Figure (cartoon, rainbow, N blue to C red):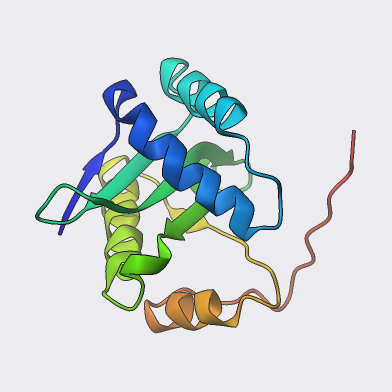
Length: 147
């Protein structure tokens, strides 16, 4: 398995995976908007995307990190907003490898932590995160405000 930071040259491959990710979360497939969204994030340096491929250069999954900061800690953090492994490549260590790559990158960039969230019903993802050392926050609530 190879995991590398994605570039604009990977946009077609990333778009297909990202669209599968969107559909996984019960949204309609929309390759055009996925391409636009990912292209903008990469062109504007607003996200770090890691792409996992196998020995045949077949895309297996990706993770997407957004840089952020903690005011209280006065330090960099990353939001691991998206982690997706194509269904053909699940249970092969791809998700764990992507998490490890994101952690390694965060450390290299001087970040103090990574954050992620997942649906309460996504038990498989939760099991992976906890197996890989992520801690479930039980003492905080997360809110959102629709604009």
